[in-house]
Image (cartoon, rainbow, N blue to C red; front, side, top):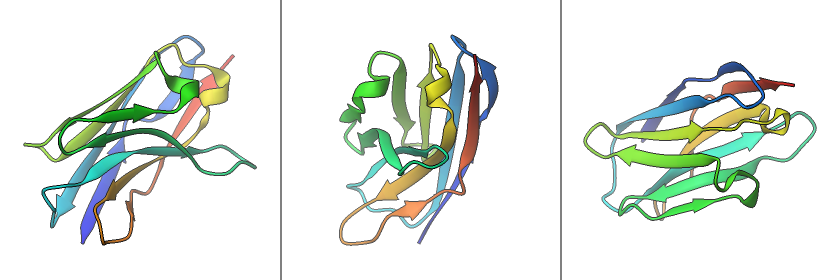
Length: 116
């Protein structure tokens, strides 16, 4: 089992920045992936960014060049630095942990609101 606790969401004006954190605890596999999904009202949950245990990263086209994902394996924490935020980035952001063959583990979600 893996427990995930997110922090860092909030209200920011367009063009501003926020940094999300996700602290993981529990039993880990050496090979895994962590990252962030988001879900806006009335929309499906979408992948924002991911990072593997070896440091490989991936981003949604909508956030490339603006968001940066990183992880501190010693602290079992993943971060999402969000710059140049836009109103369309407004959503609940969910941290996840994945390693085969287990199912995804999810955090409780943190609200990000970007005002225009």
